[in-house]
Length: 263
Ligand code: 1HE
Image (cartoon, helix red, strand yellow):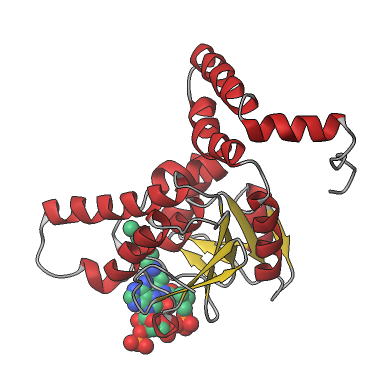
């Protein structure tokens, strides 16, 4: 059940401490119009207390056909275009740098802005029908939802250039090998896998999830000296929380699970 006001193109539900958000604009293949992008921002800004992770998936045959192309036609106005792109940036920042980790479940077309959206989530589970494309080149436009920053970090500039210059699509298997998805599952198994992973993440200490979402990517992109320093601060903050102290004590008292092969 959603406590947030959402457009009809988004459906929110809850499974215990997991929030589930579904792109629900099947007639337009979950193309992302302004209302939907702003709804995404609102959902991730207002995640209710008690939700520890979110699963994002798409209704119908496709995850998302990307930007609703009908929204970038009309009177030419560069300033409006910049603001439009920045509106997407703010929405996807709420996902990447929000309160809880997010798993996206990908199937069918994951193209253009749909891939940009997926790239802003922390874990990507792909079903075998998933395929990835950046048809901006064919459409005469450019990435605008943060994809030029995030997608090269996943798969490298050279692959993004190939996809955008030649219109090449990557299959689920190719995308997995390239680094888009962390998990590749059979058709129809994605949502269950996404929920399973979200449950694991929701059980982590909140400060560790915070550190992994907010500190780790910044450390990874800083110069090593700044990175080591920031890591030492983050480590000290995390390990001195009461929750960490309790968890460490639980392990030492043999009350916590061991790290076993295959977990
Ligand atoms: C759309 C959109 C859309 C579908 N904007 N209306 N994205 C693209 O260039 C991908 C464009 N879409 C497609 O290639 C195909 O629609 C799909 C492969 C995703 C699905 O094909 P299919 O045969 O299942 O559906 P369809 O018949 O093509 O589309 C159904 C309807 O959705 C149809 O409208 P209708 O009124 O004729 O029923 C389509 O026009 C509509 N539709 N995709 C608007 N994208 C922040 S910058 C990001 C830049 C980008 O994202 S560029 C990539 C844009």
